[in-house]
Image 1 (cartoon, rainbow over the protein chains, first blue to last red):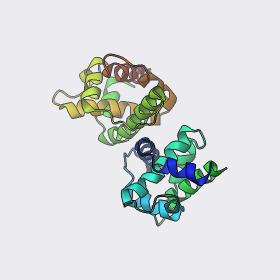
Image 2: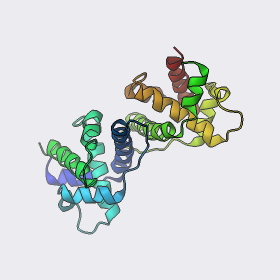
Image 3: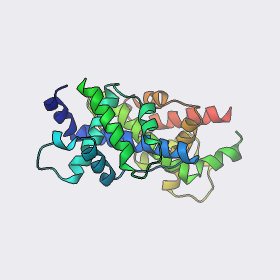
Length: 120
Length: 120
């Protein structure tokens, strides 16, 4: 995919809504497996927006977007990558497992992975 | 598992929170695959509570519970079954795909399946 096609994915709000369900489930699974007890956790827009900037997604987005749109771009990207079978649920969960000082770091590496798979 | 052990699962609120993320993602996937365009959808307590009653979960719950608790029991049951690898994500999604007149019907059949696997 070229940059223009990727931008179209990143600003797709339906994909973002699907990706929201995907990432909440994958993150809940990662936290459950790491901690050893079941948890349902939601990923915050603050963390996703920070990951989007670090992963270089921001520059593929239109100039005037708010933090919610930037956060949505990570959800849309992962939603698309999973639906297109470019990335598996297990892969996503494994990327979200490591404990790091900055919680956006795992989402950044995950977004960078998905982006590299779509750019191929 | 005996009835007492199953009741313990059904009233576990942490499992219900995990199961909430699981069912929202599975249902979003089912609706996305059936309709052909990405959607993120939440399963309502009304539908889950109706499914719980139809699937016979209600009689395994303490007498005094509200509708939210009854709905949670389906989420906790499926969350446990998935974490215990008694049921796969693909199986859950496939149960949620058929369009039926009563949207609780699919969740009822799914809950009955999970219950039968745990009772073994």
